Length: 296
Image (tube, rainbow, N blue to C red; front, top):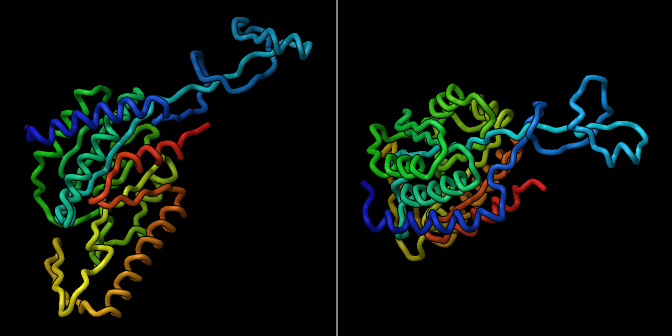
């Protein structure tokens, strides 16, 4: 069961997402499979024996030859969320943890998808696959998926993108829009993103959109004097950082470099990513993302 306050908030998200997505085509996609009942693309000359009902008489009159409307089949679009539920996603200095903010963003994406008649599915992972809901249509399916995520108690604490993405590849049969929801924080000893072959294959065959969640403390050290102790939520390793001015500047430069490197890496794979701070509103940035991705 969802907590009453959260359920009320998700109902508001459902209404807001459904209303705002009406002017956007969330799942615009098209495949080159010929057939009938398709989205209009162009024309070609008529050949003997073809269906005369597809003749474009206006174009044929202008060209003095018989032309058919050529069409391309519209795909049944699948929207799939891949959610990081490792222990680092519990962290936050804001009102919401990263994981709770991910749930809210997942609700927005889910209700937006079904409002545009897309199939919707989720995969939650840590060191292992923790939950999987195959893609289906309907508001009820989105609510069940959200309840699954809310009640999920991960059995593992680490992050293993390799296993999660490999499982996802084994499940996808058609082209999908895939949202990767994570803080994208990796253990230095883990396989790095540039070395994940499944990520590159997914980028080639699907439309992949990383959404990177961050916290204010991960961007800026607090002002003050003395030392600050950091402990990894996943490996439990510790480190001490000075709160001196020079150390803060160095820390901020490293954080900015990580952000730039992530954006550049995703761009190299043809992905458009979005950075979200858990302490800031998320609806407008998401709708702006949909708008910039809209195909004209």
